[in-house]
Length: 81
Image (tube, rainbow, N blue to C red; front, side, top):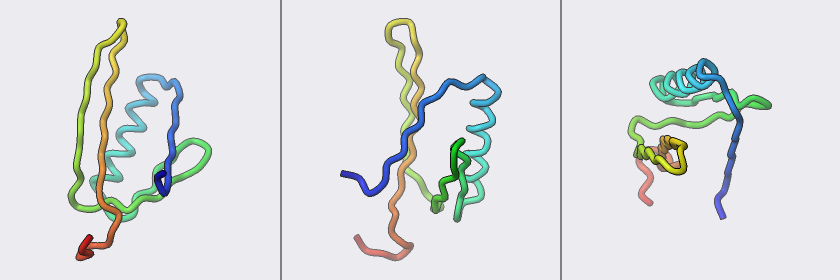
């Protein structure tokens, strides 16, 4: 079981989706503490200098699915895990 999990599924206009991605990109670019507006609330994350990324595109049953996944360690810099 994970320590924290948040999932949000909703339909957005192309402009709304772009706005959401631009806000996320700006938070990643700034690094440090990033505050993401998630509709009903906000989520604050610490964004480190390096991230692991995965990009997946799938065409199935006439629908395209694009997944962008980013992950990073939660430990403080210098922690030996």
